[in-house]
Length: 183
Image (cartoon, rainbow, N blue to C red; front, top):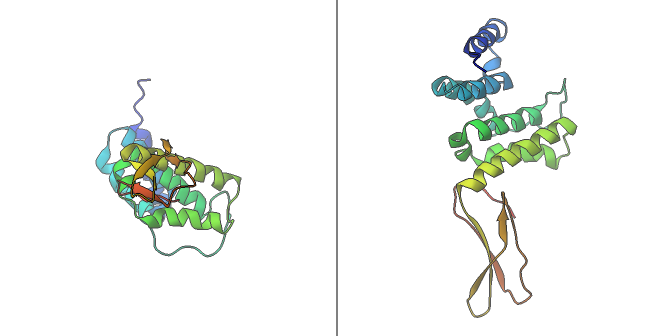
């Protein structure tokens, strides 16, 4: 609409530096600012700002307790960070190690979630899966006694579903990209 928002983002960043200089660079505030800068084609500044939240997302140590404080817990933080990275930084999304998804899946397995964190997790996994599905190829095939292979299933978004016959002696899942897949 012809409104230049760069000055607004600079003002927010200045205020964060004045009030929370030691904290905000690893927080969701940095992730949201990075995504906004990416939309404004300020890639260098966006990449610098997203590095902190991404580092927190791919940490190797996981919190062992559920802490829900003011609608901000580790799952809210991690899911939102993954969502913003998948939407605005696809090159970084492709390079995420498995720890990034483990840090999101562990609270789900422990039932450390609520309506907010679960909805953000759905958004994040959908964005990540959509981006991942468009990047490569996932195939599912059944193996037979005569060493023949029959492709089964179709890929819908990031979900592969197929029905195998009772004559199958095995199943083969092939993932042709550098992204994890689960079955």
